[in-house]
Image (cartoon, rainbow, N blue to C red; front, side, top):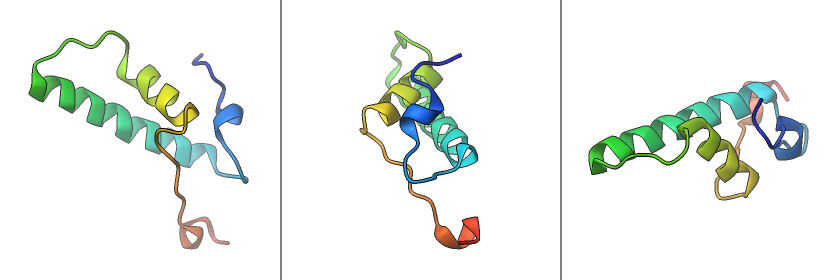
Length: 69
């Protein structure tokens, strides 16, 4: 299990699904950037993406129309 927990990252009733999708997309970006720059990653891309969301380096933006609100 990754630390911090999803409940520590989510605010204002954001959905877990949106967080998972956002982390997956960011992890793919991290992987692609490392590949393009021919660098070796120190930590796993998903862990780095979760840490970035927890540190508010990236923010989860949900479309209220998609959520049905």
